[in-house]
Image (cartoon, rainbow, N blue to C red; front, side):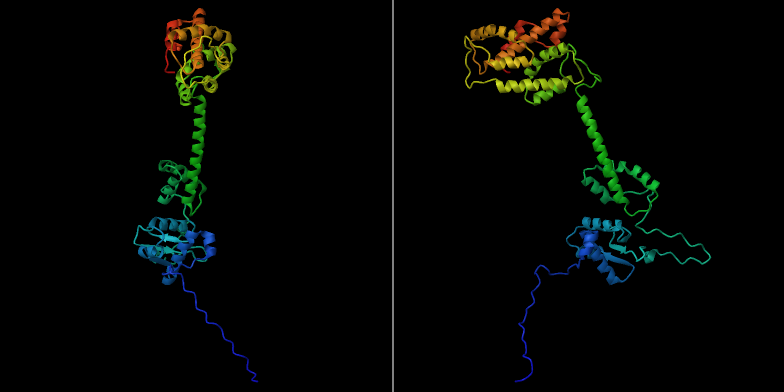
Length: 401
């Protein structure tokens, strides 16, 4: 038996072909670099670094056509934005016009000590030994803020994307430049700082505008009244208050009928407020909600019965308007008699009675004011149609309500 070990055989492994979508060159991206400076910045910095290694110079040149071919998934606006981000972070130094304003891109990287080599065409000539050495030149990415500084167009576009008007951004220039000059710092992120400054000022201005708007809303109904005072005898709701109630679905006639009872109630109490319109809106809304929920409507219009009586809800609604129940009960016989004689039909006699009771109550208030020495003309101006019985009957015949 031979002492040689048996010969081992291995199956042949066929390498897996690459994905058919990988038909061109790929970008070898460092995951650590992407996590440190951002994915987009890492992609562009890798492309610039590969191009610079091939040229083996302190300053590299890359044509716009070559840069677009290496980054077909970005448009010119995106490439310009990421280039500006790399420059603001101090990772590259750009010389000349920014992409794509020139035919090619001239850029350089920081050296080991953090400085940047100057481009060959921009290097100064050798100074004579007897001359004083010039002051060290600040790197191009660290600059003081001078009076002629202006933000980049990309920064202004980002501010507009956040809903900040361009005019507002320009209005913050003087303040920003003054603050930067007082600090006396040399920075490479003036655009970033300007973006944050304008955004913070915009937030402050919006908060001030909201506080001012809330103040106007609180005082809109009583612009001329600064202190609390009792309700005037001829008080009328403002146009804004009536508009708010009408938008809420309250009938305009219902609003007008609620004014006399509202004035009488608060005049008897003698309380002083600055928000009479707000209280009137709350009062009418409560009455209208109760009225809408309580008044029953019949699907078919009917004649009024000889023994018809208002429902208890009617008296509750009238009580909310501070209308005396006994006064309302005395109106029932003449109300039934009138509508029996007119031989008309309606869906809801309760709603008709509520309207009639409010009108008669307003007429009574007008007569009380005249008896107390108040001008009848002023009362008629405040509540037209309540001064005469004929006018009340005419409004009672109105079926548009």
